[in-house]
Length: 587
Image (cartoon, rainbow, N blue to C red; front, side, top):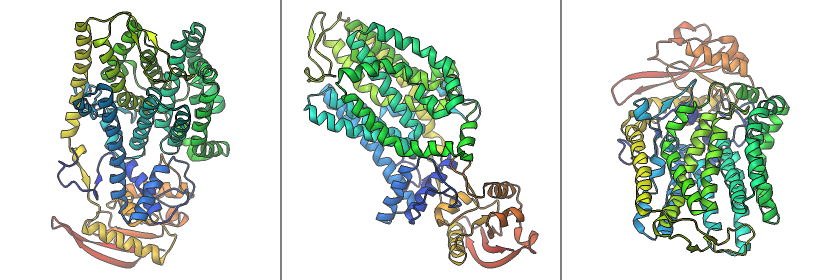
């Protein structure tokens, strides 16, 4: 798809919901130029508590390799996705022992939400700015969320391979600890994907140990704790905030996790500690910010309103995965396979809890967490599906099945068990065709996306006009270090930041706030109306001004008494349009 896009180049940024992406790219640009401080990326002032490890990492890649930050963004983002698809393909080939099964590995990431049928587009709009779309809508950005989700899926698939295949106990402990550290570290990359992975893993493991041991009391306790979360969650959120509320949401998984820790003689507790250690930098930073009254974090929590997923929309949008999960659960009951049942029930519980977190108090952008769980289930359901399909197709009633982990003596491995009743092959075929048919219909969303302009749009950031703007902005930074550059309404400050790397009088509202927040906010508001607020500009140290002669703002004439020309550069675009970029000093 990307190679077929007209003008495709690793040096072109995807023009796809770019507002947030350009803010992230600003962090990459700053790091590529040696600015390692945790500051608001546009003004390079204030503090930044936003999870940004990935952006800092690819900024360092750009610095070491000499790549443009956009090239580093594209190369690293696509590389992680290719690793995920390659790993999934390898697992599918290994499980099925048929090479061609590996070819379906990209399909889960093309699944849609039936938006083509319900709203005639490739995504479903909700209230406020919330939307629901398939994994392809997440992957296309190549941002921290897409990378974090891909890494989370790689970790979950790797854990599956590690524990469902023969391995030495020491190897398992070491590798599982390392994977747990990586999973925890995802909190420093993108919070919601980390939360989605932890919920999926916690509920899946808790359900497995309950089903495996037939712990009816623990099962009843877990079921009772679900309404407890919905009833007490808002109180927890009011008393402690969003982060404690999200932890509280894991309460129904606690009985099973405690049983698993006991069963594993404490080994699972070691993995939990590794997750906490990996997540601790971001968690500590966020907690400190909340305790000290960081105004940005207070705003961020308060701004999460009307972002829920209606029940009907959630059910329809998730059909491509809900139906296979039901089939897997039915097969687990029929064949008495705790592993399958744990996957189906654990995934369903995690999905429901996170998709409704606005109801039980956390109010942490439930629509995004809904999509994140969708992604992780899509990435992991095929291996389980292959196991189920091959077992149902070939098994006979009363047949003893070997332990799939090959580690009968291990404390947490499933033991050999007598399977349940056999399933007629016609029923297996019908179930498989039903799942494939529904998934195929959902792919129409991807087809609409593939043909859409937004999926093919690429930003041009190196035109003659951009080059003139960049040169003058960098000239300003050399002669007036630390002074912010203000631009007229015809110049995009977000693009100028990532091309020039100089401090800009702009900020991304949902990412971080500059030191002089009120002044910068006033500057941004005035600019949108085509005006200069002189007092705010002076207060915010934004006394360097760039204008385009082709712009109707005409700041050079309107503010002739306040602006002193410092330098100018002409430009002629490829379409023949021309103008002059002028650098002014505001007095």
